[in-house]
Image (tube, rainbow, N blue to C red):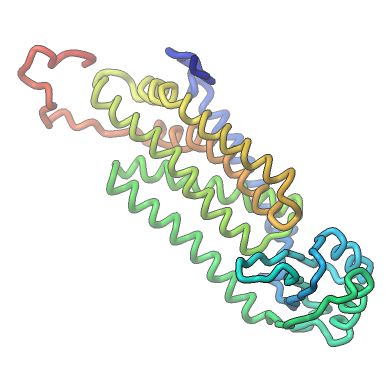
Length: 322
């Protein structure tokens, strides 16, 4: 007995109101862009600069206890993570505490570091500050520039790959869908003012790969059906292809979302921003593969070259599905 999310022979018309779906996507992208211009992003320490403190203690690390001790100091964005290493001894518990730059300063002042030390020693008496390092505004600016270059290069690579594998119309549809996903993801982070750091850049690149995978699966089936059903209108071929791959698309998305929701609920504050970006990206990426990439392909059209003979020319099966 197999689980089926989509019944066999589904004939849902995805393009009956394709202009409406395309319009919704366009409006959402405009809202995301305006939100980014007006509010900007809530950059984390990676992009704003700050101080990283490495601590060590014999007591087991409780991130909640550490955060409760530091929050009353009013230091702004503070990230606490436990460091795991197989070489650590049983009494060697290491944590990384990252504090944003204070009042435009390049690093936290000695007084701020001492206040953090005193607050933590109140709850963990044997805690030691093994190292204190700072990330200045110049390094943070370079990280922002590098992150933008990484995302742009990923999208350009996708454009070249799809163009070589399919036709230019497919490449344009895939790239528009990827830009749609990236803009909406950045927009939701701007709108909700969720902390935006290097982990979110990693999520964006992962979303690009996930969305591309979905789009290529649909486009591959479209190409097969264009050769198989030579007289069918493009809209019917697209609908048929999406319906044929819908079960696979939903199964992949649902199983991925189950894992991500578990991580979001149980993974803790450290990875919550990354997981949220992935959840949003899976939903938006699945949507864009169907309603954006395919709609662009429908709008641009695909040239069918009838001058080339097919593999079945000259045999008794030449007109099957023609």
